[in-house]
Length: 439
Ligand code: GLC
Image (cartoon, rainbow, N blue to C red; front, side, top):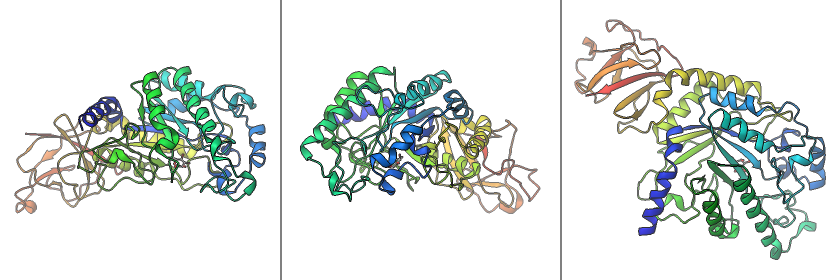
């Protein structure tokens, strides 16, 4: 028990910056940008290594400009970024000495991870790498009979379970390379565990010990045990040493935030796509609106969580214009309202009808998504509001109970218009933030 407490204390210290920063960029990029049918294309279409080889031979991202990516992230208000150093297809964007299946051996001819790290650090962003535990290229990874391997139905790919250890040596070796050759990394984002492929199957205790000895501060997700489907023991008050530093709900914002089984909040980050895919998918034009992203970021923060928002650059290395446009608009909102996001957390108040609350250092931020009839009702705050300001421009908002609200004695009322008016159009239809100072 004592050691658990100590472990949780250390986790809290390590994740402090992470919970301040709140908003990050996820980048899924690799050979799969060429077929452009998602990063699972090898598995979903059951492609062999040979079927997939043309994409390796062709890979030539002539427009790769990580400085432009970093600028877009920074301008969007993102504070950190996580790039797929290796995805499930096994292709490495970094110059691993342990494989030939890497960017340096393609027409790209260089270490794309090193360039990413340099560019993002130069913009002052924290940096992380995604590393797939699963590897569909490595010949010692279970293939035939595995649930998701591209060759799951092909008996010629029956593998000797004895050789799996060689894969572990490779995988641990690559993690060591990443943590040794690329300077300080802030996040390691493993993906993912399933069925018996979890925990000590990955020699997770040994792996974590090695990682902590190389970069003690690094924060690690929960997928050495879990996945988007299962959180693992981070959700309990007795996490294992490889339970991870934060939970990683995927394509969902947990209804009640994330707490462990005793009700204590645990660090979490929702990873969400901008359209319906992680990897570049040419035909997928179903993008979320900037308004949705702003409100979902607010929702994460209002539940003590982070948002890791994905982009999938194309085969040339360009982030789709649709994504860049959304990021720019989110950034425009954040530039004026970031104080209600960074370093903020849940408030003790119940979720209001019109939106959500975030809070920080005695300040309460009312995020108003929905226009009201008359002034905005702050339930339960009668006599408690010292000052109300429109966060975006610092202008005074009148706290005043109009004649029509006299019966609601417990509640305070804030107007965007003159209090005698009944129409109160929202100054920002995406999310109008009221900064409240309470008595
Ligand atoms: C998944 C998928 C994957 C994606 C990841 C992001 O588990 O396998 O393609 O990288 O989620 O969270």
